[in-house]
Length: 150
Image (cartoon, rainbow, N blue to C red):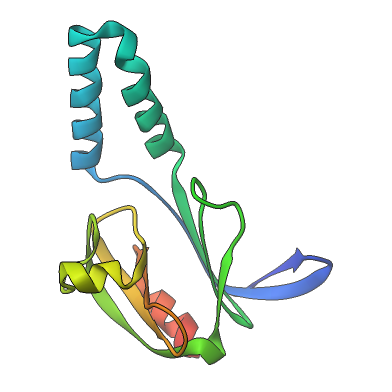
């Protein structure tokens, strides 16, 4: 399942790749409700909720495992990948993911870690030797774990 791609003039092997978009119905329902209420109550200010809906629609997270580490990109926040080298990963584990990050973490722990999640479900949490832990939401947690631990 490895795929070779040219990045910066070099061939790199991608052993795992996933692109996620917002698909949690409750987020879309809330955005539609706010937009509808704003349109009825204050028509000129409907631009703000419509902008939020557009950002939600365009939002996507891309996760790749390459031969030198894990790469994560959140399209609406940054256009470039954040690299987490394998040498910086102390351990990783599959976790339950809520809308605001790891379901098992307290609010304080959630603030001390970084989360790339768009949907509820599963994720892989990377505990780093240097820096904050990183939670990566995924629909394929077992495949992501296997690609990281190989």
